[in-house]
Image (cartoon, rainbow, N blue to C red):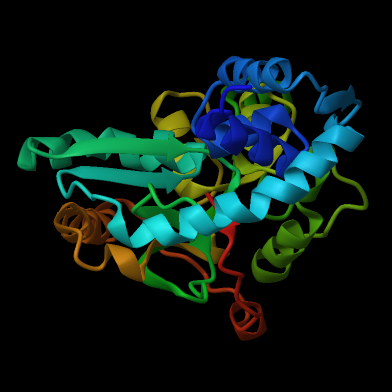
Length: 316
């Protein structure tokens, strides 16, 4: 039997650990079809079935479990041994960030950076998946939305964010425009805890029920655009929707969000010249945004700011 491909074994181990081909393929920066092809080739070469599909993804067979136990630790040892010797190209900068922040804030500004540094190649990995910089050694830095504390990572504060109620023009035409005192009579979208903070700050009565809550800001804002209700949306993310006439901010009042935006990176990126240039430019863009575009905010309670930090594996 010929020697199995190292790439196929890496794909096999990733699929075994994730239990899901889509997640494993993303971690390896492959398509699902490419990873599936690698695994099928390995199964054909070994003459053994290594996975069975289930409702949640894939599960190792008995043969697959034996192979995993024999090769996984050796692949990890090779990965660890090779890290110090990997060539890094300082003219290539790879960043991870949330899709919502990429489309609403960074990408519209990015042409200015490219014009200043045409020699740099920018790779953006926009994903809501968690990223571990120790394992994702091809990623140089990220833009994170959090409390500013990630053990083992450098964290550079960019700017705070605010939340404010906004609605679609169609909803306002249908129901009229609320005041601070009548807001509770309108269909409200989003976290009851955030709305509670809003009503405590600006008056009015917290309603007994909300139309819908969402686990991500992008879906919340899209629901508001479709006229489902009034969203307590993040100013940074709704600005393009406001400029496009899809949402209307209802008040000048706002609240400071619990989290803020940070540039984060591991110690290995300290001397990356491309990242140094990006950091300088990004801080200047953040200062301009705060000075010119960002509305004033009412700060949240001190107790909200002093909650604990996040782990090193952070949202991408």
